Image 1: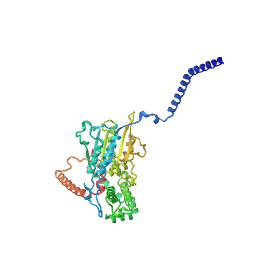
Image 2: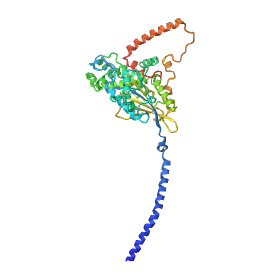
Image 3: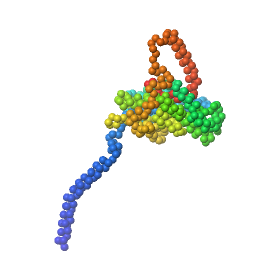
Image 4: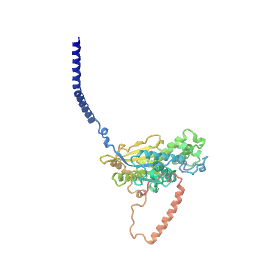
Length: 444
């Protein structure tokens, strides 16, 4: 009995020894099989899935944003409220608007934390604004959120703010665009839109006291009512009807679409959004070829500025959602691949509660190669904007053509014309088209 047990033990011991010798060989073979399988799987994967090393890095960004919340641009004849209800008067940035812009600045700080220095560097940042109180103030508050002073830049321990350079850009007139808008208001498309909404326009016109209420005045009325409602001011009974504000908003969006599209859209884009797009393209190209050290450019502007650029990018729908909200921002980002090629991404941020929406040019993916991006936009970028608008850029006089008397008459005529233009400009300043539709960049 003991002999049998000993034999069994010896057999078990031998089996264990054999297993110990065989197991490394088996494990080695299994590892080889697994490696072969992994190589085959990797070879079958799409290039994009394995080319993480070629993921492009952000090189430069331009951000075009609308100012923050403001008081109404004006009133209407039967308005129970007046300019006295607003501490700073009409068209001024509110404290809510300041908070919105500060939040946008904080968002940009987080989004571009790897693009720009943690503290302000003059060589990396360039900021411009239209020459309007609310846009200038919006840019300043935005910068306070983007670059709070740190370390050596903290010049006063009690103030978490530092002065940063902010340049204004001019608001040049464009006679040809004004003529296009006159044609637009006589077009079949415009007349059809007014005919469809005739009864509603007559109703709100009579209730508000606005004479000749048309599609072009819908925004004026909507803006006043909307801003008053945001700031908890009472609205008249007729404006509390369920469909008044939503319908005025829809008509305002339609009016905005007509400003930059609807009728002869490419011509309008060349004279409005196309000028700004050309300016942005110049900066993208300069960054791509290494001739500019800039990392970030901010442009503080208006709803019509954003709408003009969105229209140039074929991204303005014309429905109620297309009205750019306060502090809305269009992000135009330049990325570079490891092989040196560049691409552009467009993002549109309309709320701090939702991530930016990706936009794409028709005919190009969201991550659009820079050359394709430029080529698609070429038709709407004017070569000589002033000449196309009816200005005198590019024209040269011949020496000796004008006599001294002619020069004097020309000077007197110019002065007289300027006086007339100043008077007309003051009269039209409250008109939305005059104030907003020309808010594109002038000479850089």
